[in-house]
Length: 212
Image 1 (cartoon, rainbow, N blue to C red):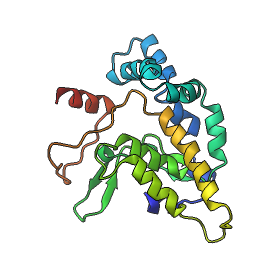
Image 2 (tube, helix red, strand yellow; image 1 turned 60 degrees about the vertical axis):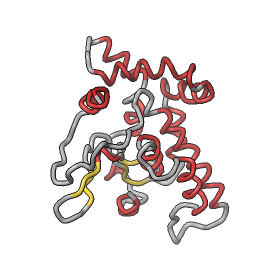
Image 3 (tube, one colour; image 1 turned 90 degrees about the vertical axis):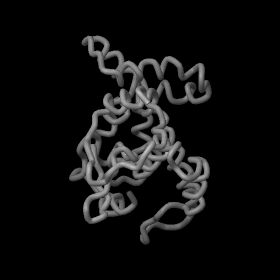
């Protein structure tokens, strides 16, 4: 992840693929409403709608902040533009990672790539894979904060801790806006065969998890 971000650090229009606004609308209440309007029966939009409806009950403090941003991500997108930008994958999680025959990491599911805040990839990875990580997301976040992030040599070091904390706050808020309705991924029962990497739709993955 760090190598990918470093390779496109401060990239411009040439790395803009999917607009940032579209990434934050994909799992918003608008998606559930639109899919229901056309009579779609896919499980993911249904889970999105149920997730947002339950948020106030299960996490009232989060609901007070992120629900209004889910309906209108504009203020979040404007805040993210003020942070460092690079090329992001947009859906970085273990189900989208594999290994080729030479032992190199393979990243799948390039549905939402484009120019964005680098910590958005990291925050999403921690949120979605929290049950598989060797330490809690809180501990991982503390480690990242203590290191102050990787800064360019030309960037003045003054107030780096404050800048990093602000950046993390904005991008972690964005992560809360996105995954409502998606379950954190539990550890697999057996290690997958790295030579058999298949691209699955989100619906396939959710249906599979429900059958376990």
